[in-house]
Structure formats: C-alpha cells, structure tokens
Length: 413
Image (cartoon, rainbow, N blue to C red; front, side, top):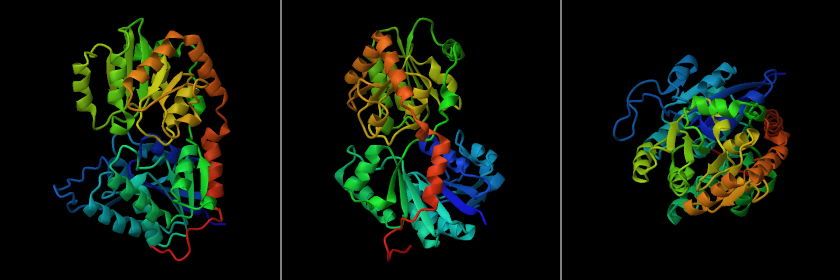
C-alpha cells in the first residue's frame, strides 16, 4: 500500500499555529504518510522592489536551500530534522500584496500539482485562502483547513470584516474538512455558515505538556538565567508584538501595579520600537523587559508568578496550554476561545479586552492571594486531557485525511 502524500501549507511557520501544524505533521506515522511543509517567503532575502514584485531569482526553494533561507526563529529546521520535506514559495507573504498574491496562487498551484499530493492541509489566513484555491486548481483529491481563529474581528472596519468573511466563504467552497481550534471558533463558523456541520470538527492546540512541567528549583534557575532582580513578583506573557496580542495594554497594566511587580514579555514583532518608547514614557525602564524571540520558552515560564494574556482576539493559543503545564496561574482576556481553558474564577481569571485597569486588578488579586492562584493553576492542569497532545492530534488528522466529508458539489478551482 502506497503512502499518503500530505502537504501542509502555512504562510508564516512560527508561533502557535506553526507549532500545531508541525506537531501534527510529525505525529503522522512515517510508514503510512509522506509529509511536506510548504511555507511562505517570510525572512527570505527576496530583494523585493517597492511595488512588492520580486526580482528575478529562484521563485521556489526546496530542501537545503529552503532550510538555509528560513526565517530566523521559525520551525523549518525542526521540520527538516523530523524528516519532512521543505518547500518555500517566495511570493507567499503575510502582507496584503495583490501582485505577490496572484504570483503565489500561480506558483503554489504548480508546486501542488507537481507534488502529486493526496491531501493538502492549510493553516493561517493567507496560506489558507490561497492554498485551498491552489489545491483545488491543482486537482488535489482532499483539502483540509485548520481555523486557528479567524482573520476577521470586531476591531476591524465593517467593510474589511465583510471582505475577510467573503474570502473565507470563497475558500470554504474548496474545502472538504475543517479542524477548528477552540469551541468558539466552531460556534463562529457555524453561525456565519462558513461550512456545513459534517465538515467541521473541534480540535485543540497540540503541545508536549510534559516538556513544560517545571521540576523543583527551576523557578530560581529561570530567574537567575534572566538576571532578574531579587524579591520581585514576575508577571509574564508570551506572543508576537502585534496589535492582536495587546502588548501595550500589558505594559500599561504593569504601570498600574506596585513597584515590586516586574513585567516580562517573550516574543518579537513589528511593535518593538513603539513599545520601547512606551516603556520609557510610562517610566517602566527598571521593571519591564521585552525579551524578544526565544527558543527556550519552557525554561523561561517557571520564572513567572502569573501569566497575563492581553490579546484583543485569539483562537486558542498554545501558550495557555504551556503555562498550565508549567503550573503558572492564568489571567486572560475574555475573547474566543480562551474560556475553554481559563474558566472564570475556577482555572484562572478573565478580564475584558483593551482594559489595562481590569487586567492590573486581576493580576494584583492573583499576586496578593497566591494560595487561591495556586489552586486555580492546579485545577487547570488537572483538567488538561490527552486531547491536547500531539499524539491525539495525529489520530485526529488520520481520521480527517481519510474522512468522507466533501466540499460542495460543482465547485472547481
């Protein structure tokens, strides 16, 4: 029996979505599946012109060339080490760029057709839309998409939100099955009639929880490694420095807390310069540290007394599972689908988005009542089941890839 050829398509191969995509691909049995990861051109020295059009050069990179050109800090090296084939499509970029987007559609259609894939599984907004249309045009028999959340949200203008919903509906016509990370993602998809019920399955972030379980003494070691001041209370967060994640809200919350509370943020991104200026404006230079991207999050988490997520919107971030595995008490914004893990007053505290006062008050409560915070953290860890493991995701993928649900009849690429 021949192996099933699966191509995982994702624009930016990092963050929670990238980790879930990687963990799922690696969980598939090597004796039954051949896996390829197709990523976008983020971090590649494309020498793009001002119009957004790429100059002459290799339009697609394969294998070692793709590995060499990978974006700093992404997961390409781990995928390669795990035995997955690597392909990079230079024009597949996160930014809206009509010229590059059309080029990416043409190139990705060719790559998927030449690859002879049985299944194409897409992740992320841009890769999800372009990837599914390209897969349909290439004649791929089965097309799967994971919603890690949606690119549309209440913080956008109505025309933009409607445009994004329209694009998702277009791509959904070319999708045989969906995995939806978090219960609210399922609810939103059904409410907006993005797909029929038989094509949607609830899924969860896939995390090696045991890797985040901190042994005794790790807290002091983590603080020494980060050269943190003695005797301070540490409030941390993990995520890209983007509007979605609300890092400026986190900083303003830290500014409202006592002088012995120190803020840490793990993750880099386009708001780094703006946040450095805000830190100075708030007078937080001595108790707010932006750590940038790190590959050792499991070693950093034990330094936290509280994990505080300030996101304006989410799917269901992996970092919540990681923090629970590390036994860190949680404060998070009441946005989809955080409540799947952070149940108000039971396994953590929920606060409104865009509310630094509310975030600061919830953090203060956790810091002032460590016994209650510890009980909530313990209950959160007790409720993590096997459905958050990579092995469980692998079984879900096997069922989905061999499933019987089908895209609407009469739809072609």
